[in-house]
Length: 182
Image (cartoon, rainbow, N blue to C red):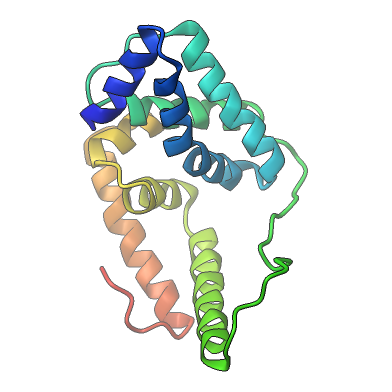
């Protein structure tokens, strides 16, 4: 975690390598996070760049260990502010390269089906539960960091994650995935 702040300080001291490293580390995850709100990957990419533009032009003071939460909080703010009414969906279905071998194809189909079911079940969750689970499990944030991003207390995040996991487990089991982990 201190690594992020070191890169940020490096940038503040005039070394562009800090900026490049932070964008490389957080660019795609922030884009995916914003895309969860907008369902438009191109708009999400633009807003991700805006998040970094703001960070690197305004140069706010960020406490140690707080850069990741700061970035996601800014991304959430921009996504909510810029949320469009259009519903465009980005899909990986049109990739040109196909995997070799029947076994690999079957595994890809199985994995795609599980991902489809997971996305379907996540979409059925209360939006607060979905966001809390995403931040904690997909982005590896602590409950405190997720609370900062969502503007909630740590206790509220704890409750949302607990309830969200229970609800998600039930939805996954209903869809035939019985080995859903807690």
